[in-house]
Image 1 (cartoon, rainbow, N blue to C red):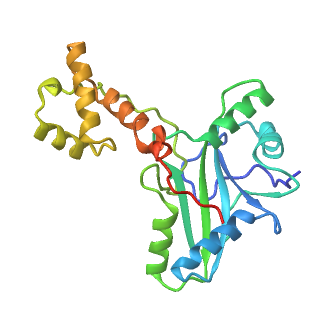
Image 2 (image 1 turned 120 degrees about the horizontal axis):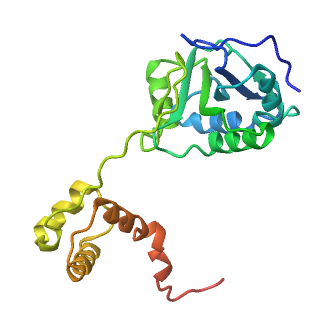
Length: 249
């Protein structure tokens, strides 16, 4: 079981109450294959320094007597993990979290396990991945590493100054594409471009024909859903490729 000091105060946090805390989980030496693999990948940027990977858990509404229980039973493996209440010193810290609205499978799994273990669902958990980087050459190297680590489609850099309370943004009204049934070829091409759709113009014409028969205009949600499921990745158009003149040596 990870050693625990008296109930910790959050590292680098302000205005924090006694029921909210932050912990970092780090793999022990010999188990940290993720950091080793990442270091090998970063050789592309001529990076020959050192990198350590931590899993960050912001735990809200946790009771003192519950904390040590979920650390050893849910958030870490006593055999391979070390639990830290403060982040060790590094030359550069990069924390990466999901964008609001993106599904955080690690946080969701941890919440469900805590609910089963503790018998209530009062606890909220947010997660992030923190990278401690040392012995880099210059700021340009760090910029390249950040660009490599953070996918702007689903992630962003996280501030470690505060714990963010979980919030659910109010959904906007779903937009209906007015006039879609009567779009000309040029307007369909423009629509493809501004919406950055992966389908082609013939696909869009097929969609337009369907909604003309339905006697209504589509919503943007319907267009995006069709775009996803008709993409090359999902319908595997490469599987329709004909292979000819195959020779085996």
